[in-house]
Amino acid sequence: MLWVEPEGPPTPLNTTLETSSDNPSGDPHGQAHHAGEAAGKVIGGGIGLVVGVGIFLLMFGPVLWAPLWAAFTAAIRVKLLAHNGWLTAGAAIAAFLAVAFVQFLLLVQKSPLLRYPAVLLFSLAWVGGLWWELTSPPHNWLLPPPWRTPGTWAMVAVGVGTVIYSGLYLLILTRFGKGRWAKKWQLIK
Image (cartoon, rainbow, N blue to C red; front, side):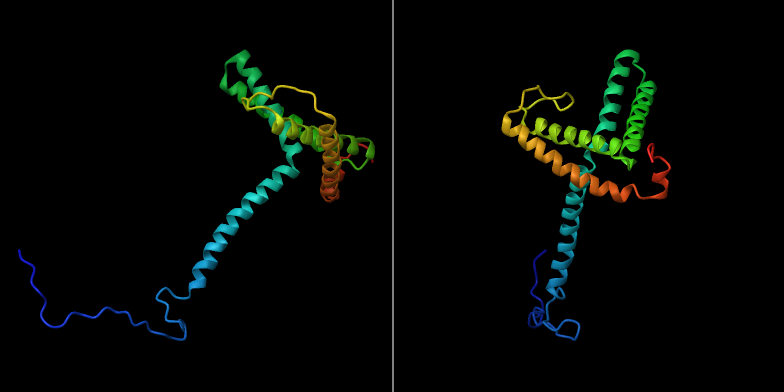
């Protein structure tokens, strides 16, 4: 089949853009900044979510880290002994709940005899653990990194980080411990 030329002049391309009150610039895609705003909201929301999760993990790291570590180690030990999936899962959940409950009891207290040492211990474990993990050579993440003694400046940095982190942590806990339900769990009143 041969191509046949259409009769009459060729149709002109529709290059003339209509302007209206909704589209005063005549842009065929509407107003260009609408697309930029939509993309900015998507990108900003994603970055905000990542930053928010990062801050959440950094602030509540000790509270999340200890129960998860207890659950993981309990699951590993029970799996080696029993080779039973349900028993392993039950031991992991029980260890997680037990450590989370002990932490809850320690952190909800208003008495400085219980609260400050608990916060200091959790903060030292978290800041020291982060230092230990970040300065260690590459290793299997399921096992702790090889132990090495920190230098003087590393100890100073971990100590200062622990004090700063403890202060921020106590500021968060003061708001958390003022609820009526939290007062029921305080051991020393």
